[in-house]
Length: 144
Ligand SMILES: [Zn+2]
Image 1 (cartoon, rainbow, N blue to C red):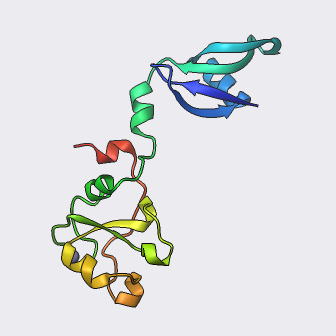
Image 2 (cartoon, rainbow, N blue to C red):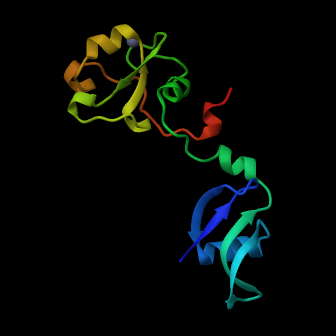
Image 3 (cartoon, helix red, strand yellow):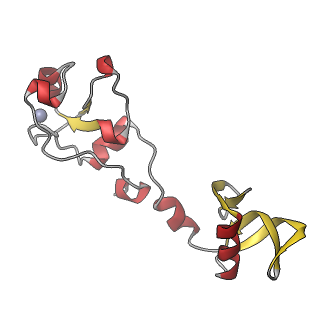
């Protein structure tokens, strides 16, 4: 049985176990919104929905960002993963034609020239090693 964790504006952030939710209540980082009063966990009824009392913005900021082309360019600071030059396009490391998808771990910023040269090949096939490994950014990593 999982418990919904709401942020400040009542939007569901994620779900946690009942055990985890009770620990949040004990630490006073969350309050009960809905509970099953027929079951007690120490001084608390079993939480069904809890709401964070603080660090709401931080929670949002530290969550993994949703992957978009614009996000990939931001993460890689518009640096081409192949030559280090200015990048304005996004390259699928494993090409779409080979089943690659737009995910943080399969996308890098690339300049138009490198993107065209690599075409529908993997970096190994194209003999174009990546200068850095893709990684999953948090929202805060994509700001400013
Ligand atoms: Zn390049």
